[in-house]
Amino acid sequence: MLARLFFIIVGSGFGYLIAEDDLIEVNRIVARINDRVITWGEIELAMEKLNFSEKEKLQRAREFVDGKIDRLLSQIAFKEKGMELPETYVEQEYSNKLMSDFNGDRRLFREVLQSNGQSTLEYKEQLKEDIIHMHMLAQRKRSGDEISPQSVEDYYQQNKSDFRVGKRVKLSEIVFSGDKNESGALNSAAQKVYALIQGGSDFEELASQNGQSPFIKNSGSWGFFVSQDEIRNDQIRDIAFKLNEGVSSKPFAVNLLERKPDGSVASSGNIAWYILKADKIEPAKNLPINEVRSEIEGILARKSELNDQRRWLSRQKRDAYVEVNLPD
Image (cartoon, rainbow, N blue to C red; front, top):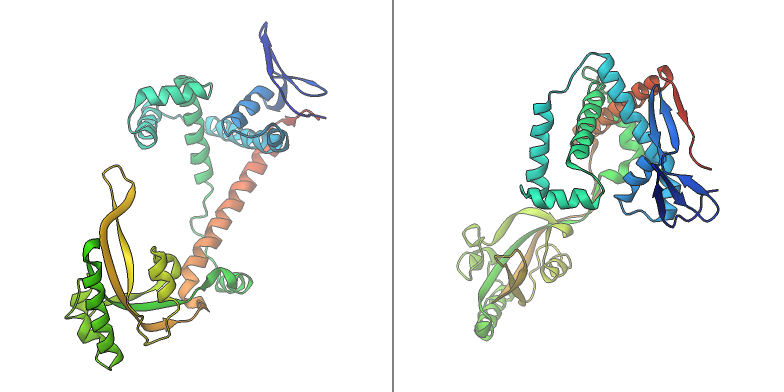
């Protein structure tokens, strides 16, 4: 039984993982695929990059071996079809990764590779395997198959909770904003307008004539429904979703934030006094099937593609010689 792994002994071309009860040779072959082999060291190294605990490594070893087998089977099938991957393709993908993940910083990239125990050449070889594997799986996509209306209906009925939307509110606002030192005057202006609202004055008319809301030209209306998740400010969200339809809130203050040049968010030194009105409320509901049909068709198509890919890999395993011999 593999237990806790403590350290690695390397010497004379052999390596061992020391467990509580066992010595596990790093170069031990844990799987054979035709004339290709997978060693325990390869699997251990792959898991090491993900910072798994020693217990997690032991638990997930089979998962990593299966993944490596699938990748090797893709390489074999790729070669059997007489296909080749131009080096320019790999170099272009390498450059794309360098830019997207490291902003073109080659030195940082090399440092990260070194910390993972990987050379640039080894990384490019891994990248080549990734490209080939994804290409072979992509060939398994179901291009002409149709998703039946009945399968869409069945999926919808079995997964209705996935198509439930929470309560949504359509809001209007009147906002008085300025420097925090002006908070008293801003509050007074908001209170006067609120008194007019309470006296029966039209909210939309007041919103088009008072304050500094970005929606002032639209009579204060946001113009769309929002869910709780779509309102980032806690105060605005809490008050908005406690309002009854057609009711306005009392004036309340919100400290305004701004994004600094370094990307951080901090106080801007400004404050805003808000009056919100819930113009219309949509209660939580299940979306009707006609609104989610295309989404369900996409889900079922992806499931179908995945099943095709799995069947293809199963056939590759059946046609190849595959032996797995993980440590007990």
